[in-house]
Length: 108
Image (cartoon, rainbow, N blue to C red; front, side, top):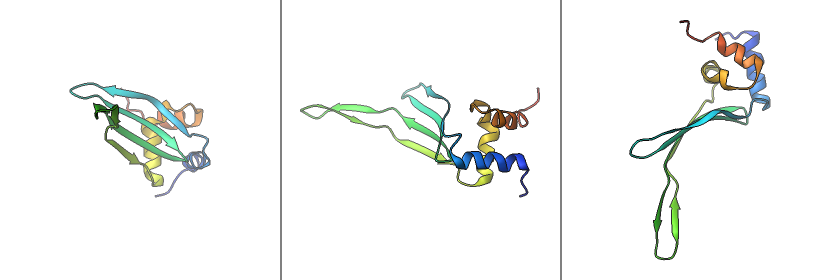
């Protein structure tokens, strides 16, 4: 697929590590067990994760903590990285990314 100069510039920014860090806030969904969801960019690769609540039990000597199940979705291809920036770019503190994401915001 042919990319515009703006998309190539954003992919270069992503690969250089300028946009690395947390994207938005971590959200907690409560129910029977809490689920924590969030997004971050590490080494130029966007990642979306869901993590279940951790549990503790007493083994006779001390409390042991068992971390909850963690599922990660990695955006590895350039097309999926651009899709990530289209959806969640408004949460990133960069003017170019926010302008790119605003183009794909649904009209009211």
